[in-house]
Length: 221
Image 1 (cartoon, rainbow, N blue to C red):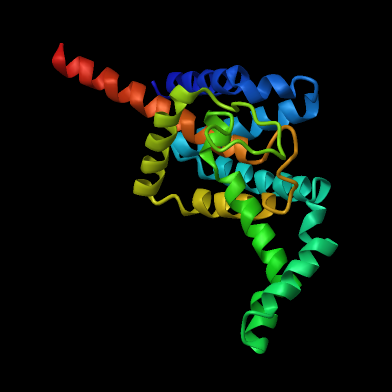
Image 2: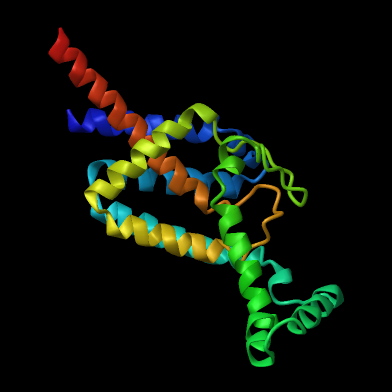
C-alpha cells in the first residue's frame, strides 16, 4: 500500500510541477527544468514519507543550487551606491546626532536595507500565486508561478511541517531564502530555488488532504 502511495505522490508532484505556469517558462531551459523536477520530487518524498536520507540529500542539493543561483544572478545593487543614494544618505545624516547618523545612514546600512528588501520580495506570496497583484513590481515581469487554488494546500503543508517539527526542512528553507536574497529580484523567472520548496509543501498538503478525505469517506460509508 505504501509503494502505491509513493507512486501516487511521485505522479502528483510531477503533475503539479509540469502544470504550473512557471514551468512552462522553463521549457527552453532544459537543465533548469530537470533540476526543478528532481529537487521537487526529493523534497515531496522526504516530507511525506519521512525519508530522512532523501530529504537530507535534496536539502543539500537545494542549498548548493541556491548558492550557485545567488552567485550567477547576483544583485550588483547590493554592493554599489549610486550618487543619488550617497547624496540622500548625507542629507539624512544632518537631521540626527552625528555618531548615530553615521551608523543609521551609512553605506553598510543601505546594503543591509537592500538585502532585506530582496529577502521580503522573495517571500511575497502575491508574486507566486497572483502575478504580483495588487502590489505590482515595476522592476520585474511578474507572472503567476502557481495556480491560485493551490495556496490552501501550501498552508496545509506548512501546518503539517510545523506540527511534525521538521527542523531539517525549516533550516533548509531559511538557508535557501538567505542565499537567494542576494540575487537580482528582477530576474525574469523569479527565485528558482524557492520553487522546489513550495512544490514539495503543496504536494504534501494535497496528498494528505486526499488521504484524509478517503479515510473520512470510508467512515461515513
